[in-house]
Length: 447
Picture 1 (cartoon, rainbow, N blue to C red):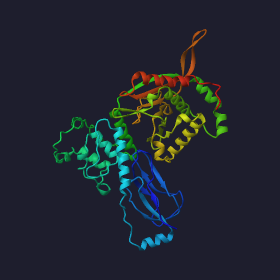
Picture 2: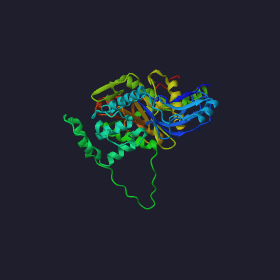
Picture 3: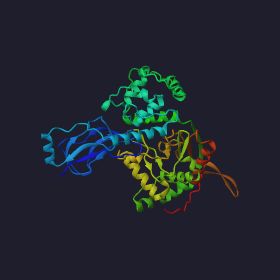
């Protein structure tokens, strides 16, 4: 049996690298087809890499904590005889030199991701030839750090690569390296100068006083990523929220009538989430300028309608799996996709590709009994919808015999949007249209 390389898989168009967090197999262990060998982590999600063949793990080519570009070999797998021969032969280089084409491709993908998020600072390619992850480049953009200054930051990662911890330590330490930046004769761009001034005057968080009996809990990796993403979103987009109260009595009664028969026939429970997604998809078709992203001064109008559904994990963290091309699926298809993604999210079995590429997001705050919320936009999208708890309330109904008060099932829809590109007229009309589709539900609908 010939040896083969286990390759770091492609995990979404914006992901250029992943960190090896834990090896699940040791050298010399027998490997089965599709058996998980190593755990990896990206800026988006943690996942496992399965073996693409059977054999014995001959050599780990990277250590835990190493950052590996997509497309690089991470392990050698072969026959038991190969493993014995390998142990008597000179050991392969622990961290093999990555192909130039792979690094260039990874750097290009990372730069593309940063450029799309940037509307203030444009980072050019490193003159020193260093590779920077999308997360490091995004922090540099936010802090107004130019590429020349970034090249001077000492790195603690593999091959002196600058990690997130390195750049945050540099920023918190007052950016002392910028005094050593070589002077240049060309005039400094005004934009860069302005950003640096803003960055230098940025307020710092208040010092926390620890009191007797307090417990200190370190944030896990996912919570740190969520925190960074939320702060980035509110500093990027001026948020505005519009609210609509919808009468969903027909919808509630319809679901109550068909849910037992539906589960028996399809083997799936029908929740409100796929119904909300269907209404949102219809409204996006009516108002396609909600399904956009902002790239500098350019508006990117999305062709695909990919709906993210925020899901709470048992750990308390949040993840947003994405239903790709939701406009091509009927309600049954949406039900199956929602249930599958929600289940695998709870089991931590989502792939990076399944949480990327979203163009619009829904979050169900009603799951926790909340009647409304003001959600933060999931960048680089420009809007997000929060659906509140459905409650019975007295409401005024207009009939041919006059107005009457009746008990109705009511819910609030909260629509947050980026006021740079979505004005109140569009943001308000969109959420009103979603409510209309829910209120006009056909109680005799077949599924």
